[in-house]
Length: 267
Length: 291
Image (cartoon, rainbow over all chains, first blue to last red; front, side):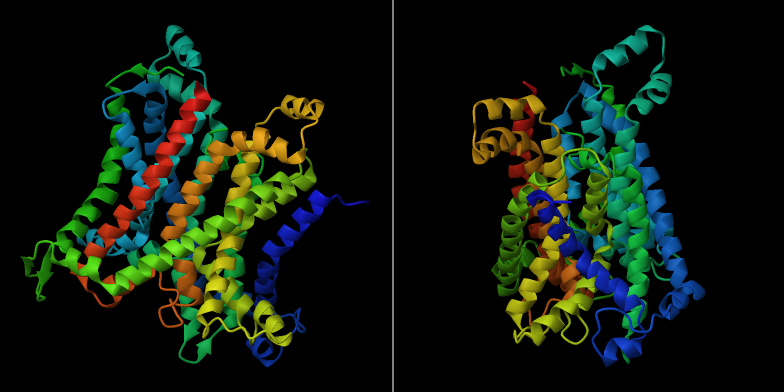
């Protein structure tokens, strides 16, 4: 088969993306001995010890569980509050709507570094420090504005006549919203959930600042591999590989909507 | 779409307002509070007015970090935006298995936790165990990102290109998908060159998404913390100490709350100001498209 120029460019780009990931996988299948002793393009003696370390130690695998718990809580909170707000922004004009919208977005622009310390103090003072809900609430800082922004884009694409027809047919607001409107923008909701998942899953600074033991995230757990005796490269690489898997699964499920979602529904 | 005026819509926005007030306004007020006070410990604070702001605005440290930050954001925007457009133009057009595969693989770096991105590049570029570092060393290039500032910069920029170009690609791809075939056929009849097709058909259609891409890339690169922190820790020396890294060092490392708070507010204002410009441009294009 002849490969066109476009496909060559795609193949090159994907190679560039995959090479560092391949290297991580390669490292995770080597023992530390092998990593430090010599240089080889693939593992000479494949070992799953690094993965076993993670799966048998609860302080390791609980990191993944904790991360997934706060990511899911965050996604649910963000969607619940963003749905009505996005509907309001997409359908109605009201006092201060434009300013309000930019102010919401401005929270997406706030550097987490600015908020790390105040968050620590705020959540400590209300007794939420080291809980999943604290991290989930902290991540709404950037996820809620984003969710409103994306959902508003998708809702704008639904003709207003549908709302009006439903009201004429005697639907109340809540019944209309739940039965007719939400199914119409289901793909938009899926994409929004994907984005909330993504940004909450990848964040380190806030989740590390707000947790200590009980709700410690995987990102924070990974810093354990650096000790006085050096870095445990094998386990670090294995832990890294395992963090990629949930993301890869999520992408696979939304792959058909991903392009539209990345344009925040504005295409 | 024409929107109707309805003040009751405020009630639908209320949950968001309450949540954001809790998770953004209260902490921001804490920062403002610190920025105008000093302490001798024991939770005793006294008013110092704008002293911290003056100190920060005049400090070399803030200037250097700001210059590094602006330089970094400019470089990655200059590389990622054209590269992203270029790749998007070569994405397979038809829906096939190959398209799905491309989409999934391209999106993959975006879903990797930021500290793992740092780890990946640390492992990839170390001269003793990394593929990149080792190969460069083997062919005689003097490369060491932990000691040489230029090498550290190159590593971090390539890392960011690796990490985020996909976002630009996907956005542009979404924009390109919305162009009807008829436009291309018309261009063919007019015997438009490849460049003219791009300049007069594809680029205008991508304008909206490109602005989103620039806005998002600008904001996120300006706030970058985790990836360079993992790879270089801000070093060698202070060569890769960007604003966020410096801020965390000041606030949590040294616990200089006053200066750190003043720093935070100035930092936030700079981002807000530049983002506002992009945002206004974006709204403007949106309205143009609709009318």
